[in-house]
Image 1 (cartoon, rainbow, N blue to C red):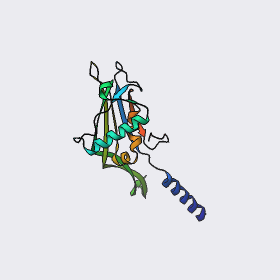
Image 2 (cartoon, rainbow, N blue to C red):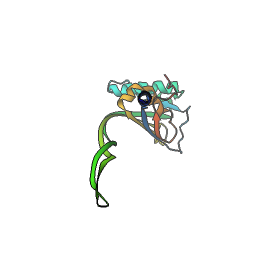
Image 3 (cartoon, rainbow, N blue to C red):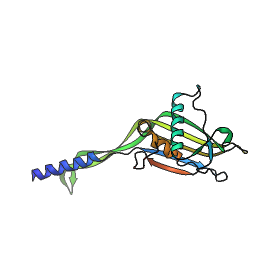
Image 4 (cartoon, helix red, strand yellow):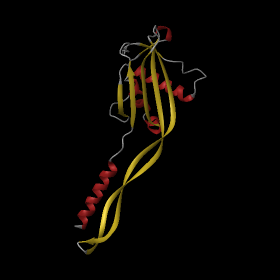
Length: 197
C-alpha cells in the first residue's frame, strides 16, 4: 500500500513538473476600411540605418524588414510607395498584480449543543501579490504617401522582454501578419507555426 502511494505521488509530481508555461504577447491592430492595405501594396520602410537611430530601433527595423520580405510584402523606395511604414519600440517595467491561494490550518474550540468541541479547520486564504515585469512594446503604423496623407493602419504588440529576445521572429511576425486587418487578442509566441526566417 505504501509503495503504490509513493509511486502515485511520484507520477503526479512528474506530471505537474512536465507542464510548461507558454509565452504570450498581446496584439491590437486597427485598420481604416476607407483605405485598405493589401498584401501586395507598395510599402516603404523608414531609414533605420541612419546614425541618429539608436541600437534598439535599428535592430527592430532590420527584424521588420526581414519578416516582411519573408512574408512576401512588396517593399519599395519611398518615391514609389503607396504607404510609409513607421515604428517605435519601448522597454518599460510594469507592475502586475495577481492573487495566490495559500492553504491554511487552524484549530477550532467552541461549544455545540452545550458540549465543548475542538477540531482542525482547513481552508484557503487569498493573498495579493505584485511583481515587476520588464515589457517590450513594438508599435507600427502605415500612412498614405498620396493625398490625403492620413494614417490608415496602426498595430501594437507587447510581451515580456525575455520572451521577445527568445522568440524575436515570432514577436515581429505576430504583428506584421495583421497589417491590413483589425485584431485584438493574445498570440502564443512558441506556437507550432514556424515564423519566417
